[in-house]
Length: 142
Image (cartoon, rainbow, N blue to C red; front, side, top):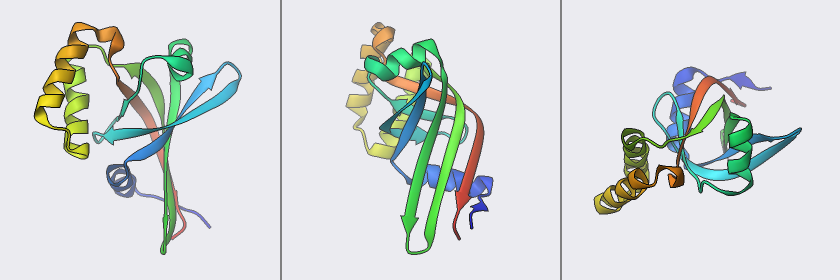
């Protein structure tokens, strides 16, 4: 039987894991892609190439969900965040997303600075995306 997770447990799981599944709407079909992410306490930040099927889906319909799952000897737990996804194009937003990535994935400072400069000059090519979360839900087996 599944039990509801507290907000603190949801945040802990999102901070612990490194990959999740971004779920988008493609016309009348669902579309999911596994990707790395960062969580800032409110929103999910993602590093994605701004091209391909996922990008086309986002442009047409920004409604999205993001899911993480973990299982171990204690049982399993999962979280789903729902909201709207957007490509981050402003310098401050790109910097915020890349700082989170730098801290979580040990990105060297010079790489962070180079990426901020690169995408600030060409914002349509920014690989920083944010799922502005409207709701979280979490379930666990223990």
